[in-house]
Image 1 (cartoon, rainbow, N blue to C red):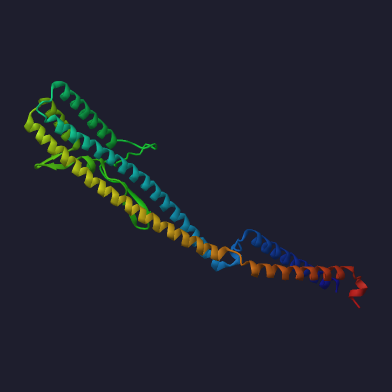
Image 2: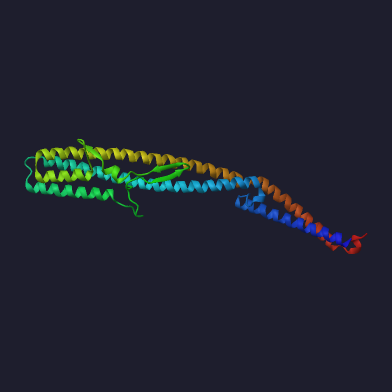
Length: 281
């Protein structure tokens, strides 16, 4: 009889401990707003939340790549714009150089400024950012993963930007064209100057095309970034629906459990006060 009674008492203690833990879990859920804290709370929801968590981590990596790509794209656009401005100035200088009244000092000044333009453009083409990453890729564009199965070239290459330009059937680079223009200024030959004016105009037209191409890259990055943001919001909402606390339901349950625990503890206390003779009556 005593053994049976002890087993009953132990079972009751375990029941009360379990009820107390459930109350604590409920109170934690109310204070944190999160109900799902372990697999046993809801196995199916736990699996779904785990899947969403992995998806969110992947989304975060893709968004970081888009941010990186956007930064590089912005640098490329800025440098292309500066190159375009420099070539505009080069056209003005070359047109001035064709002025028949230009003296030696004037030609020397134009030569000096054209040389500076040439140097600056080369610096812009080979510039690196604060992390040591080239503004323009070399040889082949680096593909950046921004979504499942989608890798984007975020900037053009130095070769695409400045080389392979067709001028009257001859393939030239911007540096070649500017070098030719400087030589034409120094020689003062009108035919050479006229040819160089045309070459610089072709170079600027080429840069305008590269600016348009870079704009397309930037727009695509923006579209992908917006889509990733939208997906991220959806994932966050889905996760919140699975994890968040239904306050009305949890508060009601905790209140009921508190009443159950209070009644159980009162009954347990009364039973503990009974003697062996009371139990065997």
